[in-house]
Length: 252
Image 1 (cartoon, rainbow, N blue to C red):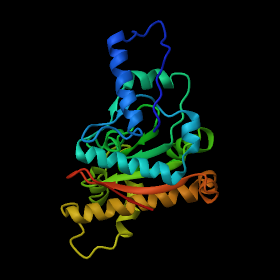
Image 2: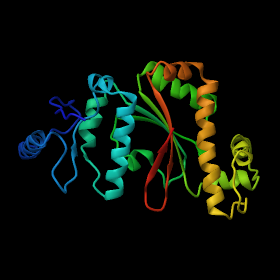
Image 3: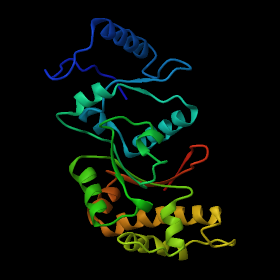
């Protein structure tokens, strides 16, 4: 991501001091000399959100690669140093996210942190079990067909409570209908061991199948998104986040 400085601030926003500005300018100069890759052994400084020009120059594969690199930084404990106030100001008048991420509501799996993206870089939809319903599909259509996102990433995770609930045939208010959307993934999962929610390997296998089924649902139930993918304008990919270790496994 190229780095740009935000030079104007609304009257309601505090202006940075001269010393703070000079320190930022010096850091940017060093980053520029290093090709924007950051100092060796130090986190990169992410000052601004994507511009429309920057986003439009990216291919779907390049967007996916950026998310993979973000997860590598997360696992290494070398997250970008995000200037969220500058990103907030830069996106106040418009947004140009490169990706739309559909992930689970689980508090241990915040996609923006796991993939190290800042304000304005991604659309984020979260629902238990990362399922695709009409509202989610409409949101993804807005993200890609209207706003120009290049990638849809469906992200499941290990030890998913929604998956366990579907396996156990749990019933609770509106949750009952949600879990019904996950249940077909149970029968579609080939697994030779104990097929219960107490078997962590089986739960994770069903979770991965569920991600694949969500991808299929996006393609089949949204002709808009399916056509965009066929045209090469977007890519649709799946992933599984490992709660232990923090690795995101990406797959198509």
